[in-house]
Image 1 (spheres, rainbow, N blue to C red):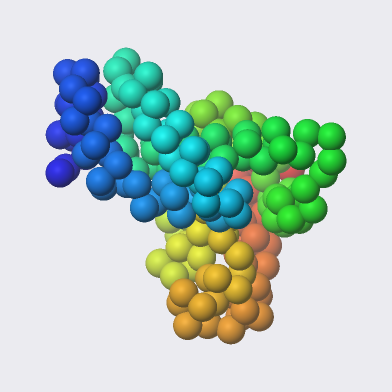
Image 2: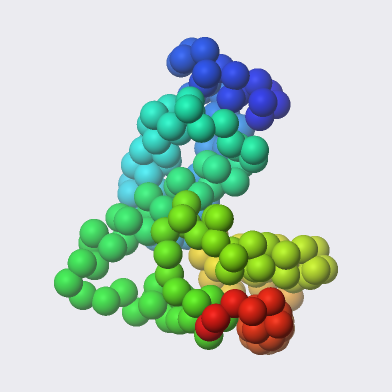
Length: 184
């Protein structure tokens, strides 16, 4: 079913909307949540929480991209769960992953707030300049939080090649942001 039809089902407050959303984006939700949480049970809970959050927010929100909207929600819910579990202790794996982007991205804001931010717009513009494979690697690494090893296996590359490509992409992103006047 097309995204606009699913959104119309949400606006009509028909429960079928959740079933259609789960049918179309359930695998994506589970994948994002599992990559972040590394727990099937927690990933399933975040997936279900995502459906509830979409139900609660559509309407009044009419997302331009249902896939991006759902991805952002499941990612934020999963990261909230990680923060909850590691409230007093730091999670080295996620800190290391996010620290790779610290040199490029000014600060960690809520994704919904950052969507209108100049930095977010500049990053989106930069990503559009990348070749398809590099863009996919970057998004899967830093949005879906896939490991370098998983990316290498998925795309038939060596882990060192993926790592090098990501390092160079981050360096070019930093240069791009500086040219765009984004304060780092």
